[in-house]
Image 1 (cartoon, rainbow, N blue to C red):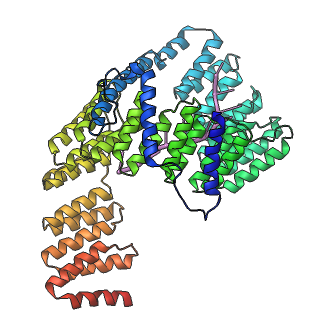
Image 2 (image 1 turned 120 degrees about the vertical axis):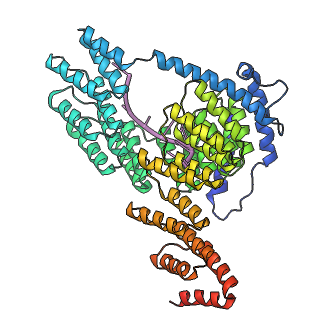
Image 3 (image 1 turned 90 degrees about the vertical axis):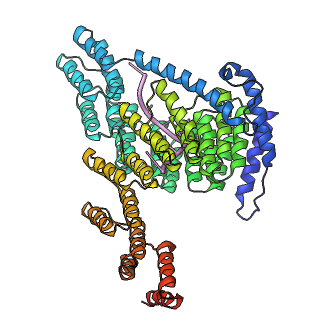
Length: 561
DNA sequence: CTAGGGTTAG
């Protein structure tokens, strides 16, 4: 029976990590996994044929060299269809104007109550609050669910004062808050990182005759784990389970929270212990639980176990989702295995899982890193054609990418396109452009971009200054470099080792060894971590100028002092 | 109809 084999996999995994001294040996060979993934993709593709009409027939997307093209053909199709759908949804969804029109034409209180909920969901909180007070002055008190929507909306934007005001009003004049009200409010404080306040709210619930439920506990356990208080979370849970005589079992979500937390602390054995308990109770894992396992294995560099989980999901009929696939893609990108990332992209497209902004971001960044900037730019164009305007990081990666391969013209045209589409240029955008210009030694262009930053209010950061200090030093413009250095101090930026190293290099280039050494002592005494670069520069300089002996004595003195 | 777990991070 299939179930037995699933269990045995987890048992094997658990056994492997239960003893720290046991040698680590792979459960499955890498080739077996590649075979499995290939089979999987082919099988799934057959049932999702309509998703891949755009891909060339005969290619399974895995052949060396063929993969990228197949992936991009499918990708284009998917991006178009996903974004078209999104566009339609956006256009048909309620727009605040429509709600406002409703407010002015209707006298139906229930309809206005529904409008408060919609306004809350859309984040139009001032209007929502105003409408609530209008209804109350007309002697109609919106129900508890409407109030919960409002409390929820205020908590989500971190406006706890307003949420607190609403809950007080509810307690004073109704509608009486329920468990969901408190859960929402507690979650609000957890999001702010104020777990103490959350816990005290939890204790106060009894005073209002409201019994906390599983959701309340999960919110708090999650918050405790996130604060690194896993022990606290366990104790809290033990207390709860002691009180609940009829149901002593931990639910799936609680277990998922705990497993995730154990994995994040690198405690695989404990995570798998939790998993074993869950399976012994006969619980079925859902997609989130599997995603936690996959992420846990990936972040502990156990890619084979992660793939095994992927296989288990498929066998159990649990469709991997965009998070599952992004987790793998992220892992591969992080370890420079970008071909594998593209393979995962191909698998997800074949499975009919639509990529999201995170997928696009990782793929675009991966392509740029690899120098395939035109392909990255093509993804961007696809998104724009479908009226999805990506966040600045995608644009910035492409600008960096073009800059790195010396294509300043295209870098600039992406920047201009950004402006045209109303995407705000940020410090990273300017840094990318400055990087591109400095690469072709266009110091004037770079400096005029810095002026543009000052005017636009996008303040230069340490990276901007370090690039400019480096460039001016290389050109022998030490005075200019020092001016920049003073400016950064005035603006409250502390120069780092890179800044000082650039200045040392600049002085050495000019033959001003004394000044170079002075700077070196300044880093040494500032308590900054000194790396080998400035030492190397100085030693090289000394070797050339005065011989090795003297340079060694420089460092001897330092180490003695 | 509202409240709980997972993915990114220049």
